[in-house]
Image (cartoon, rainbow over all chains, first blue to last red; front, side, top):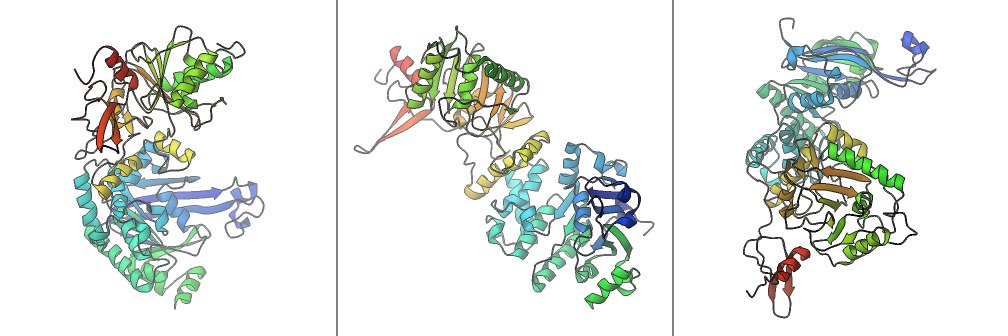
Length: 279
Length: 283
């Protein structure tokens, strides 16, 4: 991977909820899992660093509360991190720390360079607007002011995501979970962002629908060459999609490597339990 | 004037606070300035925002006109006019050219306003983002970041659903390329009057506790898409049955007995003036 270009670099991400105290600021061994027993501060992310290469899919696994969503929210700037540096190669040649940008610049990065698919479609979609308008929102945010042009793009995207054109005018609240997720994906990639985040996209969907959504993600990655970070607690999903995988536990990365390697030869005791419980 | 009231009903401190909010509003066109809305002997939602502005800026030399939906004679206009004369010494008029301060609900007078006139508009919903975002803390942030895609989205949704923009009154405008603003529920017909106007426009929302302004010669653009531009209501072919005016905003009357439709100027002061000058339909 060394000769490949990076797309995203995250250095020393720290997210804590609470002020921290002398004990937990200096010595993390006092923490009970990720919580300080003295000052009750939650350390949601502890010194997380990662690199993603262009066109690659990076998998993130870990149990509930391990910091997966905190990581994703920080990357998509839904959450303000306590510390850390974040660089995107497609923004100012990766020279500027995204976390330190002004709100307007952050908004630009979100609207033009990033896409996000949330676990819960209610977070990513406006349930009382038509599906077409939901997809168009990203285009409007990127400055498009031509209705005919936007309608064409939305219809093309949605039919690509196997949402029939006849239902484009319907709001997503009328749709099944799988279909809502496909509308969300269409919205996320409407501007052809170079980087896409997928947060537990298949959780709560039945197996056949899961397979369809995963196929779609794979298809998008091949067609557009989008760099992706995929979060899941489901190892089967990670195995199918991700080239490389990181394993998180209590706000820290405990293991990282090629997906096959992690599945076949897990090193950390937590990863071993995780892989074994799958089989 | 009833001497038991302070001049303008409100105490001097309150009037000063409101005038300070007005100064800020004029300095930042289209920006909603929060203010402490006072209690009045009129219920909130009945024009108290506009009324507080009017009471704070009136002086003895002012001549006041009060409009409700274009009319000088509807209950709301009459009671506000009576209340203001009870607690100030200003004269009132129905002629918009004579007035120095005009308080209005839902209309801007037909006769173009001058630089020495102030139009005070009553506002029910000052926040153009409210229907997409219920939280004030979030909408403030959205204004700060110029995050206005949701306003455009609502217009886009109309086009997707019915093939055109449905919004009739309170059609959102962009002020000086910075803030999206609700112009209060004036018909689209009146929106262009805000653009590069000679007069000062003040907007008061008593229930929502917000004041904002469009100073003279300010750029005010109604939102529109390249292929679905902003359009005003089509008044072509309509003629006032009293004064014969054309190309003004008309009210429509339907006579169920004869089945005929009649049109009449919505701006009653304008209509009355034309008739007293000898213009009527028969001539």
